[in-house]
Length: 297
Image (cartoon, rainbow, N blue to C red; front, side, top):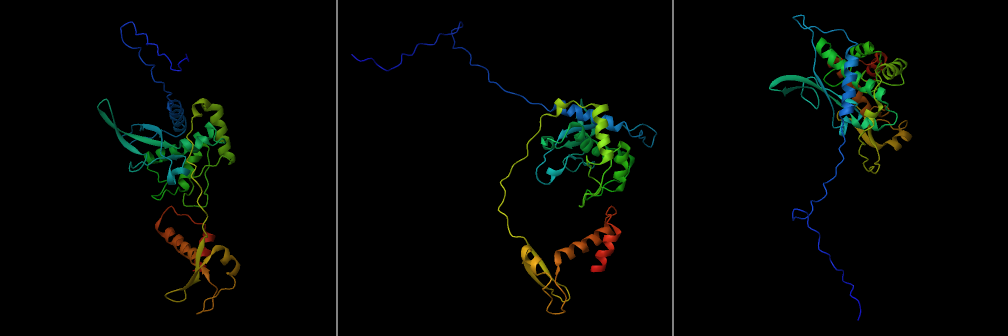
């Protein structure tokens, strides 16, 4: 007689109380940003103490309340290390909070958690490039000093206030103005070293970092530009691929006046620059560049 392959199921032994044993509790790992937030809060106080006391109209000391948290770094904000909006209309700024039934304004400062994934972003560098930058905004707000335009262009006054912290900022060729802090600058490098030696941030608090999205690269498309001459209305123009125009730009001329075609986008940008110079008090073009632009139009 052949043996059966059917397994014999033994009855489960009931628990002492007559019920089945309780299932094993679910396991979970909980990460926290509390240590990082605490270090950034401590860094804000460290930097804030380097500025003179601010008094209100009644001669009382102004003591702002701040709250530091990560912000959504997607889209255009991916380049930002920190965000703040003291009008309270955007992602981080002056907001009403309630605590124990008492309502007060708290200044929110957002930091980019993805920047800490950069292996060159040390704790002390992150503090200088992020917290020091936002400290200047808060101080300038309470001192009623204009350091940034509505378009987020940082002016020379912002750079001057940064010097209080031993940090310099330079323009980087776009409309952000003097908002860039570079660790390669001699003064800034010294300030970063001082934060490491005097403030002594806890490296363990800066280990957790969010990795940015790695989107699939799009297929490259041929770049085109419109070149022409505005001697007539409508203008004489044509669209060329960038690779082609580089080869023929010294040969194509206007059929009306005989002048060489120009990049119409460049001319539009030049006009916009002149317009911005007259409407934005913080727009500071190089005088030589502006003179050259005006002579070409």
